[in-house]
Length: 489
Image (cartoon, rainbow, N blue to C red; front, side, top):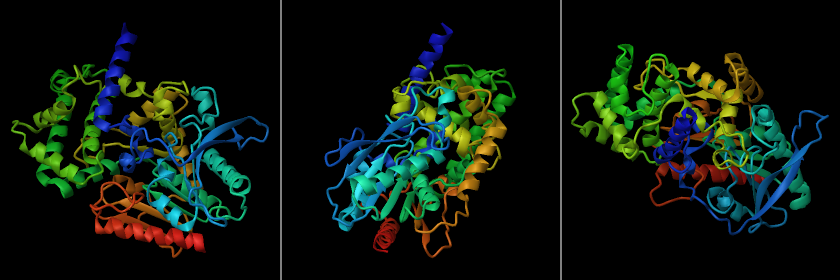
């Protein structure tokens, strides 16, 4: 009966999070590996100008004695290719392969003008491209940036020699979010093979305790919303914390209709509650990729006639989740979406939830904490909460030392905020907190970093639209100039 209850809460949570976070919905712990900029990609896009293919490579490039192989998916679009033209690649990130990006967008348009052959690959462990039979914890050991980079480079060599038939073809990479980071790291690691790379929202600096994320969300509420709005959120979270300190768990559970009552002997569920409440604000602010979302959210909060800030927050929560019998923001429900080990399970094949979490726990960190007191979201979301999440999903072997060592090695391998790389472009948005783990000011004549003023997400990868800001159009022009420069030498 208990197991059935957990399953029911998770079933409700899946729908609940889908409402709050849109079609690519999952707990915000994995959001940094998934760019919000792709909110404009049509769901269920059907390719009409691309060919679907597969490439075979090694399961473990780092062990010469392991000769096992697997295949990953890729797509090809040669509609604009002219002999002697370059190879343009949308680098696969932490999601299933989508041919949309080689049939639409700014990179596609540049390829058309430059006579490029377009490709996109699926990152190992995502979509159908699995090197193992299941995603049990021991089988996750081949999931790493290093392995993915070697997949990419072997494939590019194959494309040059066997597909395009030009071993000297220029190769330009582009990617969004984690895919953008992999693209830039590939140029950094293999400059003789990669002629240039452009990363949109490329999170290239690993960090365990990413408290700046919530702090910057607060500043965005002030900048795009109102100081009074910030005050409502601040007071609401602090009041909730005071109720917890006073042992009045029942009052909070009733106000926010939690499926699992908050209790003193379940601190992880208490942290999950605060994490879920903060995540609701994040979804509201960034989910539509529109700066007006922050203003509209603040208008709603400030217009609420409730007597206390906590009641305003409860009403805000209720308007979003009122159709559900209860809100399952308890710890067990929160990790349930990461517990599926089947390769073909939708949570893995479509959304990559377990795989993304594994990479955060072992390579990147990016734990969206709120414990410093410098954000409006209280002080109850600690880095220990995320480490406990990693341990609950993957086992007791993941501890603080494993997480910190993974982050240290990622930064050591790729240089963190001092990558010393040429022929790359980083693009971030002014109000996107992920810019703190990207490069926003790069002093290198052969590379550049742009921050799109007034934007909450980077939409640089899209072609010009009628409602685009002047600064977004300017950044796109800069990108086009850089890419053409790399192609033409």
